Length: 226
Ligand code: PGA
Image 1 (cartoon, rainbow, N blue to C red):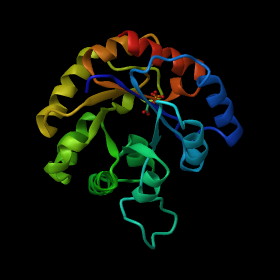
Image 2 (image 1 turned 90 degrees about the vertical axis):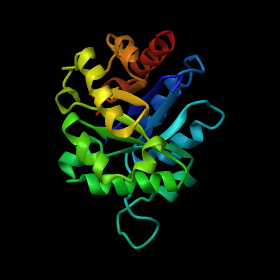
Image 3 (image 1 turned 60 degrees about the vertical axis):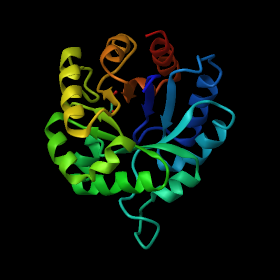
């Protein structure tokens, strides 16, 4: 990946008016056309964000998708519906999905496959202990169609970010199992550490520091400079 991929993961935050206010502030900032910036709001906010991103180089992301195709699966939002809204990237297997919603490697593999079948890019999130099992659960012909995110659980939302040399070591391990795929880092990324993470990764998945438009804009600007 040539330009860093910087993804804002808003998780289950924000009301409609907060989303509009964030976009009002963020879209006013003059940002370089690189890196590749993705905003991943909740499902319910996707249409509003999609509309505001028309004519912008910022991409739309979703935080998950159903492992099933269109059909009788009450409560699910499928990959075809996401693609239809203009979504280009889908987070798959985030540790919060694994932990609170009991998603297992087989579900995650099936979701990644649905995302790919519908022409979008899965961002497969992994902590180090997930790597081998996740690789075994996925069809290897799909690996090259994914982005991988190394997300150590201990660093997510804690401010306790991972040492850069650890990111480099685990990135090598991910590549050993999945091939020469892009690997981004997520876990307490902020303006102070983004530049060093980009020295050893292909981008960042930003949670807490993406919730305020000014701090996310600063991270994007610093990624361009990196
Ligand atoms: P954080 O979240 O930036 O708040 O640590 C990252 C993530 O969960 O992807």
